[in-house]
Image (spheres, rainbow over the protein chains, first blue to last red):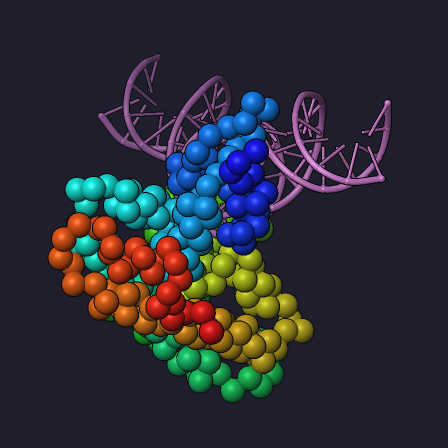
Length: 140
Length: 140
DNA sequence: ATTGACCCTGTAGTATACTTTAGAGTTTAG
DNA sequence: CTAAACTCTAAAGTATACTACAGGGTCAAT
């Protein structure tokens, strides 16, 4: 049997077998062939592809975005600029998420600072702020 | 009929009716009473509670965490310190998410910078980096 | 020949936070 | 009085990314 079975590629890529089959259902990877017993067969490229997916995921790309990236990778008409655009869109996306989180952090910190942490939750400034919207920093 | 129907509280809180019912299933809110026709009835407190939930959500609290916050709000034995602890845990959580996103941002930016954006995706440094793991910044 | 490790399909479950739908009863305005 | 607007329950659907399970076939070693 020449070619790698799903267990081999999964292990080499650091993924579970079920995950690889899931990625196949999601259109991210396909086996090169099947054995007579219907076993999936992959080449080394399968491992590379799976690692690609895994790395892209650690960079915050969704499976849908990774599918697009993989298409660019195969498309002879695709340009480096196309890839660069995807990466830059993701950078902007991440910058926005950081900005949003920082705003939340600031609000939480000022909420935190307005409470001395003494006594019961009656008249807790944090809870009050959540209730009545006073000292509401995030809006606006 | 004295008391507010679900449509009124939902609108006042800026939520959909289905969302309010969903929050009820999730144990975040309960109507004060039911009419003979089984309609939910709320008081002004219902609106306050729903707004509390909505604000806590904008601050990144999950429904599970909000449930805990609401319990603290009602628990006579709960202290301000308990609330403060929740807020500080969330601040730490958010700080970590920001750190993680910044790491990703840096990796993406250096990936972006290593590509001139000229020509086809053959030998695209970004795709290559995703494939072979070279110039991999995030790990470590 | 048999056991254990591996593979197959298809379906369902997990977590989060809703939204939608179906089918039915109730209230209110004209 | 009727039609619109509102409400009810229960179940299913959405999106994301898996994970687990049932019930079966296959392969390699002993």
